[in-house]
Picture 1 (cartoon, rainbow, N blue to C red):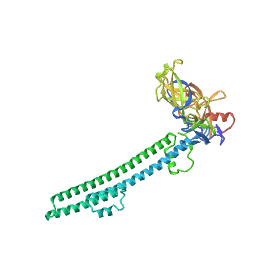
Picture 2: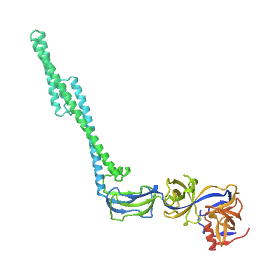
Picture 3: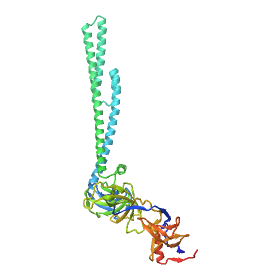
Length: 441
C-alpha cells in the first residue's frame, strides 16, 4: 500500500470511476485545429473619431459585458451630446408653449360662446377685461356695441310704428341694420375662433417638430455607440465634459489583442481590441467523403490535445459543410467544445474521436478511461484508492485501446474503483518518491 503525504495533492484533482464492461465500439478518428468560436469573437472599433486618453484593460485580461475598456476624447461626440441637450430643452419649451396655447384656446372658446349667446356691451366689457384676446378684443366689443345699438334702434322704431307715429320703412331699415350688426358680430367671433385655432395648431406643429428633432438627436447618439442608460445619465447630469467616449465590452470575454496605444488618433475604421469568449471553442476537422455517412449534427466527439495529456474534452458537431474541398477531397466539420477552464487555445492541433457503432458478435470488454492507465517503469499501472490519501498501484495487462478507453485483460475486476483524472499526478509523485511505504493488508 502507498500513502500520499498530506498537502501533496490539491483538493478536487482526482476523479474516481468504476471499472465497467462495454461493447467494443467502432470509432472514427479525426484530426483538426482549435479555432475561436466566431459567434463569440469580435473586433471592437470606435463609432467616432477621437484621441485615446485612457486605456483601462489590456491584452490577456478578462472583462465583463459593459465594462469600459478605454476612453476616447471626441469633438464629434461632444457636438452630438450638446445637440441632444439643446433639442431636449427646445422640446420642453415647445411642450410648455403648446399647453399654454391649449389653455388660452379653452378660455377664449368659453368667452366667445357667452358673447355669441348674447350679452350687453357692458357685460362684454366686464367679461373680456382680462381675456387673452389681443387685438381681437376691440373688434368684438365694437361689434357687440353695434348689435346692442341696433337692437335699441329697432325697438324704438317698432314702438313708433305701433303708435302710428313712425313710418314702416323706418322699422324695416332698423331690422336690416340689426341683422347687419349681428352678421358683423358673428364674423368677428368666427375670425377670432379661427385665429385661436391657428395659433394652437402652430404650437402643436412646433411641438411635433421639436420632438422629431429630439428623437433624431437621440438616434445620432445611439449610432455613435451610447446606450439608453448612458443617454438617460446625460439627461440627469447635463454638466461635465461631453466629449468623453467610453468603449465598452459587448460581452464577457478575454482581450486577446490590443491594437492602439495611449494618445493615438483613431476613427471608425480603426480596430481597438480583439475580444473573444473562450468559454467555448470550435474545432475544425476535415472528414473524408467515405466517412460522411457516419456523422450527423449533434453527435458527440471526444477531443484530445498534446498539451493536455490524459485530458479529454467533450464536444458536439454543430456544422457540416455542404461542399467538398476539391484539393483534399474532404468536407469541413465544426465541433463546438466546452472550454470553461481555458485549457484549449486557438491554433492548437487536436485529435477527435466519434463513436459510429459497435462490433457485433464480440464479447463486452472490461474497460477503464484511458487517463486511468499510466506507464510506471514500463508497466501499465492503475491506482486504486483504499482510504483517504491512500492508493494501491496495481499493475494491469491491457488489451484493445479506444479513443478514450483502454480494455483491461487482467489485474482488475468489474466494479473496482480506479483513479481516472489525476492519475498522472499520482504517477509523478510516485516517481519522485513522495509516496511512502505504508502497511500491507
